[in-house]
Image (cartoon, rainbow, N blue to C red; front, side, top):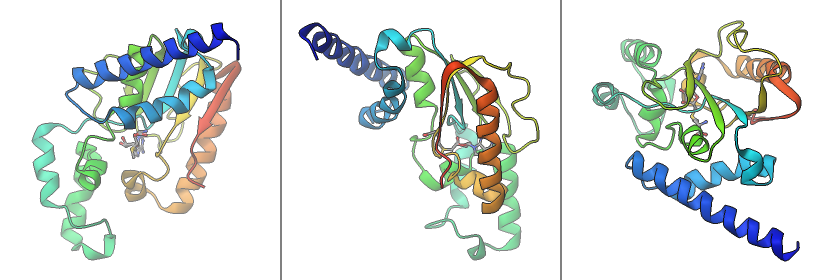
Length: 214
Ligand SMILES: C[S@@+](CC[C@H](N)C(=O)[O-])C[C@H]1O[C@@H](n2cnc3c(N)ncnc32)[C@H](O)[C@@H]1O
């Protein structure tokens, strides 16, 4: 790498750190390292920040925010780890409706804010055009977003073909919330279907990076 490229890379690193720092400050969060490492997965597809600017990036299962009023309800149902057999049918039923109505199951498990839509937030800060899709609450997010259940047939049909530079998905297949809704075999089928959709949505020369969990 020549000196000019090295200087550019250092400059990008500074801008990335600054964008992550600003995002954390804005949302009162402190795990900058986690956000930066997720961001790296996207940046390696574009090479430099200049290439990232203005790019439309679709994030499937982008993360969501649990509404304060629901978080306490959900914690009541929390046990040490999720094992369906350990729950009484009526508790499972209650949890199930919370999952579907409040879309907060991952927070029941993680009890932290790791699965908020950090990637879309920081990509927006860096001048890209992220589009986030999640079954959970995305109210008030500043990036383009849709609250959609990806297990529904034709869920992505409304998005125009060849409209994204990158279709990305991380930790959707292993999401406890998804595991709660459908079984393992159906998740595998869903991930194959999402990849098929991603190939339709991808611009010529675009990329697909979907972690299928297998
Ligand atoms: C483990 S989190 C990962 C979030 C983010 N991608 C990340 O890497 O931190 C999984 C996300 O998938 C979402 N999800 C689960 N099932 C879904 C479904 N059927 N449709 C849309 N989103 C779903 C959850 O709401 C959650 O926000």
